[in-house]
Length: 358
Image (cartoon, rainbow, N blue to C red; front, side, top):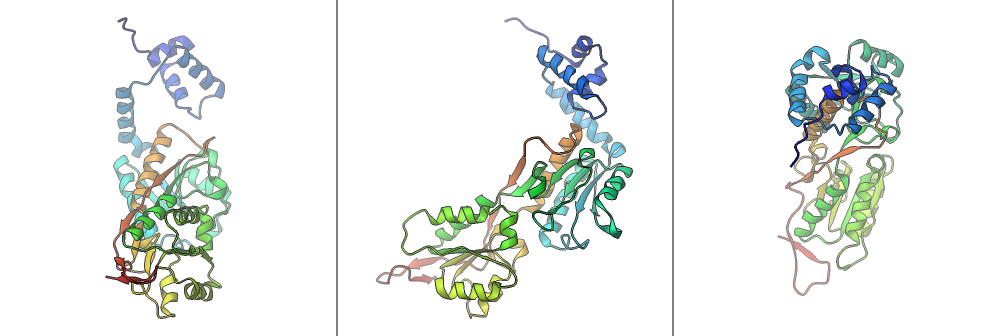
């Protein structure tokens, strides 16, 4: 076997007539270098069959973490809601911040929440403030509305978003696995004997998640033996929710309800219906729902930590602005056994669909 020495940065430097430092920067797309230089270095690297040394990369990453507090110590968690605490006061947001803060400390960063509308701030001025403070990394909190505009000077920053914003989908986004979460809720409800399962979701949230909850629910309704017509999905808004939900419950009488509308249980109570006595209830976000509900835990702390992991990688590679191809990371939820579901069995001799809570 003929052993060939590994091509190093020094070999590429000799081939191109550049310094080793310049070659290293070019391979990381450093913004200070001309595009032509970066392209020339990459062509030489390909010609010489250069591959990074894993041990060297690990050492460089370690050195980067050691000195990060001197170079760019602050990660900005930016919210752009009408009021500074509109997003922050949610329990799910607080868990995300806790997860992101803890992970940031392991890399040597400090996570700071910055409200983009403080004192009448414009997007252009806010960009200048971030740049003046030496902030290069941004975690963008969920938008107040799915199609909101927020036009910073994105090319100056490494950006990760905590959702998939409609207008900014080409930033790396960290999101719950909405589709898998609904399928998990169905699986757990079926295990407990529920058959006719309905879904109630708030219209703005349905749009925010690109209707993935509805899609997964429709797929699950299409599976298995059909003993009765499926319960139609109910999408509500705040203005008409109470009357619409009351009519829906009275007409369809579902065995169980998968919900992402936090006022569903109080509205059902006005009909003297409760979970699990009259129906099973599974929330798609137990953290922001009523106390003790069964359903899906969206691991917002893990989402926050993952956002920092991805952002650290972008900073290390000097990647700024959006990606050419949209990229994202999904975080699976897990089932939480609350008090709003119960095991049900079909009684012998009863009509199909009649069930007993045991």
